[in-house]
Length: 160
Image (cartoon, rainbow, N blue to C red; front, side, top):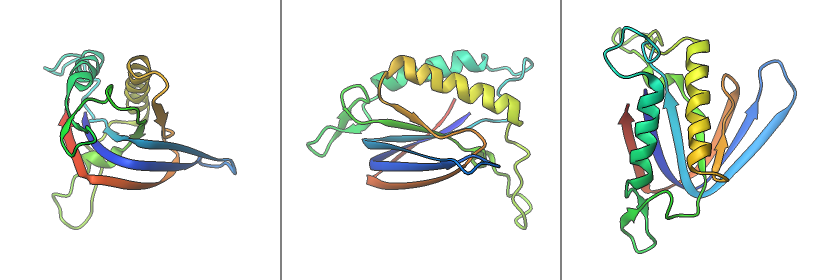
């Protein structure tokens, strides 16, 4: 899995499900957006890595202690738990884009829909368990437009 954690002053996500006229809007303030990309072998039993649940659990254990947020004094010395801001989680299969041909991007390294959805849902469940009342999400496989104001800019890339 690849994740991009982006510190934002605010973020609004507009969600339109495919084949639907219903639009949803969700917002966070003074928080982070987490873009989650799932690799094609993240759910493989042959993978040398621990299963995806263990890797996600370990990631959140580290994330709760990681001093990666603005503390208000211009230093990145606050944790996500120290700050009152929200967390917006968005699935993003394009994090595993392959551009080796340089003519056309393909997404063959991204997980298939069912596997990616299962892992995304587990990721969101764990986030809600650890950060209750802070989590907003996109909708898997929906059309989403995100408007945000990036803070500083601060971006972190994780591979778990």
